[in-house]
Image (cartoon, rainbow, N blue to C red; front, side, top):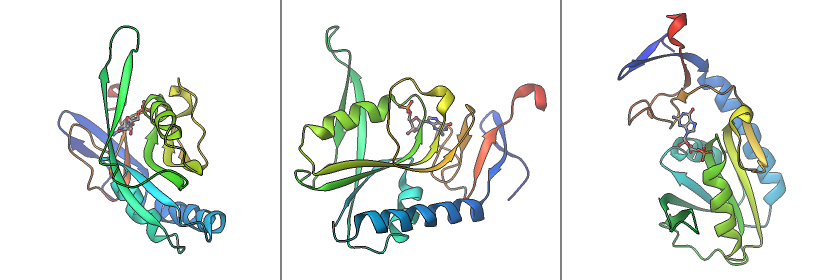
Length: 183
Ligand code: 5GP
């Protein structure tokens, strides 16, 4: 992996390599396979960022499963309701299914906190979360991560599906923002 990369106006340095990510994702897949054997889970991958993680994770799970991709859109509701989030593209019946949400990164937790509440209303048999990355220092809304790849510091990361203003999603490994004073 190159030592530094630039995207738009920012510089990033290597953080998690391809082999390390692959090993961790494989282990998560094996754990999920054990836990969901015979349950035909429905993987719900959240677009756009989770597409790479989801592709590797589902291939590491040998049990029968369904895979769907959803996009979450949030908009400001009325003053009394605050932020409202809607799910786009969920064309599977969720009721009585074992749902496994696949997310790239849990930062403040806002996105997933709202989405999981929405999902519960659809009466699934169970809901669990697989997240590749988690920034504990940034968390503001409680989110329970059942299958976690890596805990990381509160710094902006790109690659392996994660973008900076559209760029870097195609990088096979993960890079971390270089603080200006370090350059
Ligand atoms: P949350 O709702 O947990 O604050 O934010 C989750 C979403 O914010 C992620 O799905 C991701 O799209 C974006 N995000 C949060 N932290 C990062 C980061 O370090 N890098 C990138 N590229 N996106 C991030």
